[in-house]
Image (cartoon, rainbow, N blue to C red; front, side):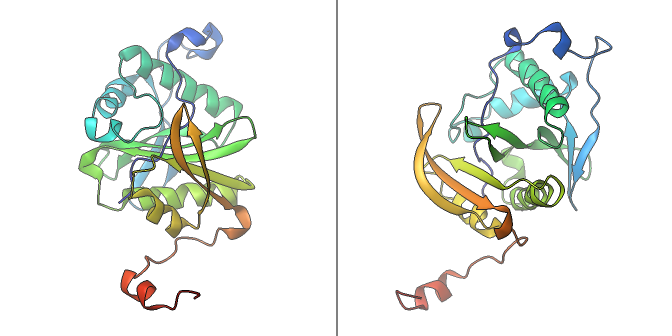
Length: 219
């Protein structure tokens, strides 16, 4: 199961922010629930989640597939929390969210974030290894696509991943993404994918490899 889509635009730390970007009460941000699926709850990030972000950022099995830099220090984690809350305010409906299962356990993060200078919005997911293979990535991906296209009415979404990551393309295909020409993200080669709003029709069934191979070449 794919669980390491690139999350674009990860900020470098607290140094780029001003006092106005910090919590109004001077303590912490609220951790309100923003979105939910059958088994997932997506909440806003707060400073109290810094250790969760560090645990994710220091997991080698996750980091090896990243196109951007990992969350490696406390300052990185705090900066990401501030950036996330700034995004919630300035681009309502977009965000980077603290993902937890129905029991409230942290399993990773999901995101809809601006990417590049062309106005693109990218979908991203980063899960702890304990959550791999349980269908959380596809469930969360479908939740974010429905939110993006049905609630926000975005025209399209993009996604990108490491060229050697074989688990991501099948997941994106089930969501309706089509591969586009490759490019670079933060100086690293990246496979790229895109889905237009008109092509979103919900989660598609998993392809049967045997049936696909049985078709004629021009099918």
